Length: 346
Image 1 (cartoon, rainbow, N blue to C red):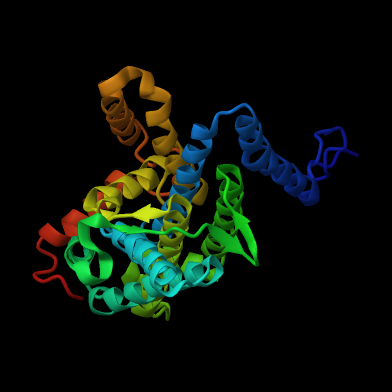
Image 2 (cartoon, rainbow, N blue to C red):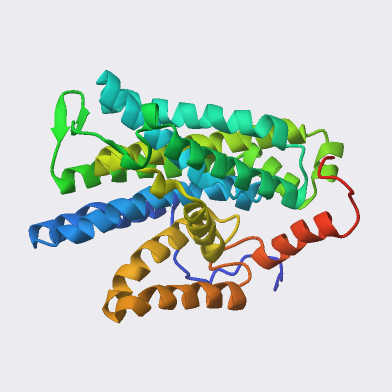
């Protein structure tokens, strides 16, 4: 007798096991992150290895920005400042005190994370666009401090690190070996952020993003959750800064301006707000696209701008996003200017 609820035994569609899927992903990552750069280096294309280093550092930055802006729904316009705090912490500790990379790297992240907590404590009760303006102001304060605190930061002259990256006595001097160090650190950082965004913590952040009043009514401590997310996000931004300082060997305040924060935000928006793969894809796209379009000469940045504009216009949720960037901006501006709150505090 025919039973409509019985499983269809004629369906021969292959079933992919979780282990097989993980092995396939690991194999693809190995090819993309290890084999291709190694081959390019053997062929004498070292310039592309340098570009890959920058792309991986921006992948960490985009992932950290996605946690606070995409997942938690807080528009941050000062992310580059924490990137700079981590970079300067690592560079000054290595230059003035001779501390090794394995010590300056976590300290760069920790100092940036503590800076994030100090910023978050008075600003996390700010609503909508007021928080964005506050982070913009903090970013400018930190940039001006790096530029003018000459006895400590050397001002516009910047800080140079002469010692190579050393891990447990092994020195990484070649461009390819530094690339592999950055690739490992980027994979670890992105994996931790991915675990966080796909946990109860990440789901709680999404509920705050959608409606913080409902989340609070359900028993979630919204302010505490936002501070934790901001601290974690700025920690990884500082970590990326420490990696950049050691890999390039020189930093200056010019690398941590407001325009840098906008670039990181654009990576997250183009890739897709709330999507970690989207943020990483956006970082790779906006770092690699200017290099691909180098043949256009002075017009290449115009081409990049057109691609960004069309991406936002035609794909409101980005390439892999959960949230429409336009809807989020409208929500932020309406709450500020719609007359629902007369001040920026809740």
